[in-house]
Image (cartoon, rainbow, N blue to C red; front, side):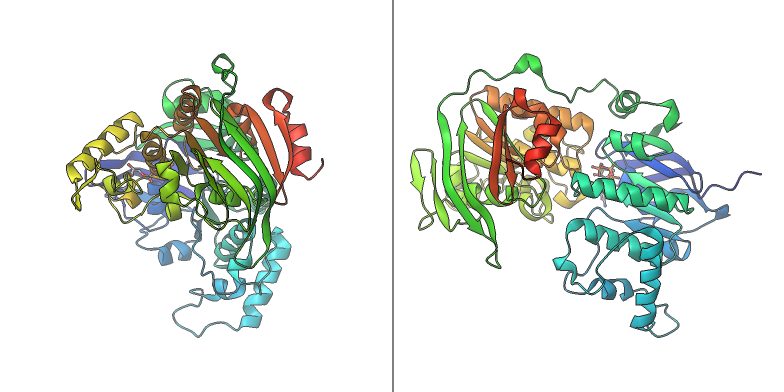
Length: 508
Ligand SMILES: Nc1ncnc2c1ncn2[C@@H]1O[C@H](COP(=O)(O)OP(=O)(O)OP(=O)(O)O)[C@@H](O)[C@H]1O
């Protein structure tokens, strides 16, 4: 007799007010397999997994775990059933050590906290078995993202997870960290763990998963073994049409025009005084997209921060909008906007939006003192709402509700809202970081179209992305950063993954 499914969710229904997030969803996951869940932003993937983890309760439907009916009313019950979840935004306490993070909340209610030595021993054994290496005594805020994620997985396994849910685990990882994670997940699967993986990266689904479920508008539209499908089939099932994400050869930029932004000799340090940018110079011309490639953490984020006025460099010069800035009087975000320099930040939660604000408030952030939005000290809310509704229609932000809190939109829809806001002022220079992180392929195609349109209208776009495919699809020339310096620059026609990879690794 075949083993019972590790997870069977049947006829799951979930509504949030008017939003029908899950409609009659049935999902069956075989034990010891990696099961992918894909779908557009807002398709209902996170909702379904949150129901499985007890974070939300379904309005109706049944759940069976390893063949037994289960009522999961909270994460404690999910954990008791052997379910673990690694969220997109990690649930760790930054100021505690890795070891303390595992101990926190792991103690059973009926007895005292287990001794540190016992937990340490248990974790060490798990690390040896799974290859998930974490420095247990380091404080979480000192750990790189990949190591924090390993800690989250380790924490779930330590609590006995046999079913592991990962929500877009690679969105924040470098390609190397992604490879490492996949190695671990394959090993865990071979040891019998069942893995549910939400991702927007269809190549990842093809390389890692045994089966995949595609969701669209709250429903399951395809459920298939990987062997019977392809990236194109999945894309078509997700968005209902063919998607083109490659280079758009027919729409190459005309020859670039005047220099719109010029930076020279930028040097910047972080809060601890460590040098992050070292003598970086850059010109952005009208009608070009300049891609900044590099392994994350090599100065790209600091470059965006310095150019957008969020950070003052220790040395360097910036010419933009007919003005020159030096560290004594550096550009600030307000001035940047006045000079038609817009910024789509890498971290939409911390810098792009104010999550408790409703969408129409987030959609005018930074622009609220424009005459259209403020008169004699009063906010002109009607204009803000009206413009937000138009932005939402133009950028297909779903649900189209300007009065919904920003936090209630799915990640991809939040991203579209930020981009819509920054594009609304028709900037001359657009500084954009990780524009499609967590965004579905249909929306990626749309965002690529918007960025190209801004370039074709004579704007200059600086694109920082950790996705090499994205840079190759969009950029007209590519600047590679390594250790805070410009390691080299290549016109797009000379860019191969190998050539870029060499520069990213520090070769000249
Ligand atoms: N707490 C909530 N209150 C109101 N609406 C919600 C809530 N959580 C989710 N939604 C809505 O339910 C729908 C499904 O959202 P969900 O987060 O499950 O999508 P998703 O497929 O995971 O999207 P993404 O890929 O962007 O993360 C969306 O329309 C979302 O706005």
